[in-house]
Image: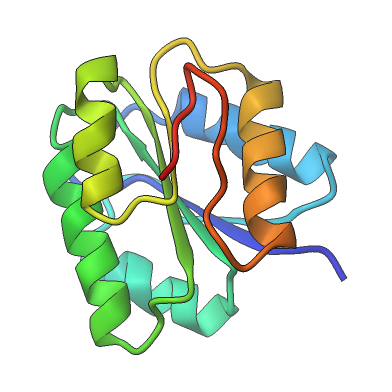
Amino acid sequence: MSARVLVAKPGLDGHDRGAKIVARALRDAGFEVIYTGIRRTVEDIVTIALQEDVAVVGLSILSGAHVALTSRTVEALRAADAGDIKVVVGGTIPQSDVPRLLEAGASAVFPTGASLEELVSGVRALTETSATVNLEEPCASE
């Protein structure tokens, strides 16, 4: 059985081309992908993650609110007793924000410039182990 991944667009960002490309790359790599569409609340994302029994929530964020949205998503998953669901984040993310995202609870960060191959291998590593993984730059994890 393939791992289930939720690709989500939190907040008011209406640009979803990258999220759709990521969803397709993960699906082509054998993952079962659920895509939320744009402008989802953190509460929506957590509800869908629980309903769909996903292993990973991938947040695609271009708005600049990546630290706040990642923190809120991780906290909401923990509050729902689903802290075992890994959260990864990608999008328009400066390298300088990667440590803050990891401290906020992200298992991996795919900042601007990360390749689809890096993303797929990073998500695969997270779903094949119960621990967070170390990825090479420009991806990062704790």
